[in-house]
Length: 247
Image 1 (cartoon, rainbow, N blue to C red):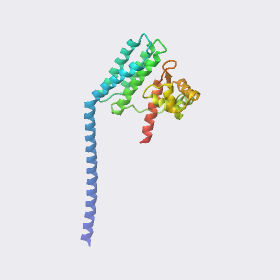
Image 2: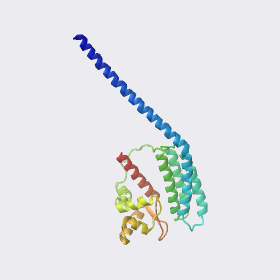
Image 3: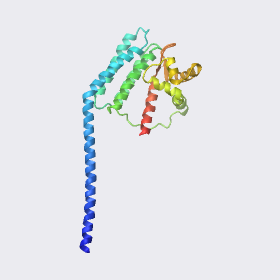
Image 4: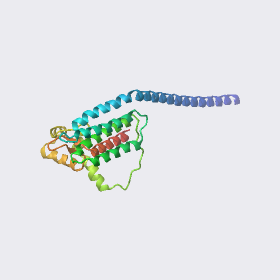
């Protein structure tokens, strides 16, 4: 009886050891597979990021040329400065790691350039450059090249300003649709009307809400509507929050 009991104990211990070995083996395989996946992704990034960067520059040339103010004596000069800025920033797409400090330095450079702009119409051009740069930043995040440093929420944020200037303007489905549609390009009044189903004064009311909050602007009287840097950052933040909460 004692021998049988000892054998059963040995069998249980053996089963426990086998189970542990299986768990360790599973973890090893999973880790090895993940390392393989990471290696493949690294190779893909190394091989294609140059192509992606070139594509970004090509797209920027087309979009910038189409959306800059037409009747401006500084247009050609500013176009050259803006493209040099975007070409330089696009080259970071080929790097393995982009720091938060680097991204912020580009944003500060853009602010400095804007201060030198002599005309009110400069807002149109700088808004477009800002939008194109933020597209590059979003791409860097998608490729895993750039990850924003985590930050704590400032609980001293001004409630009224945040609600009135950030949340309330896009807390309406039609206004949200308008700003979201402008993320991909300019829109005419008629196109926005077709998108939202709003007409005349009803549509003007919502457009005025967005323009007064600085989310969008009209390129010139009776011209197309475009998203501002503030509007783009607001939608990007909402998109990031949605992805985080949907996981």
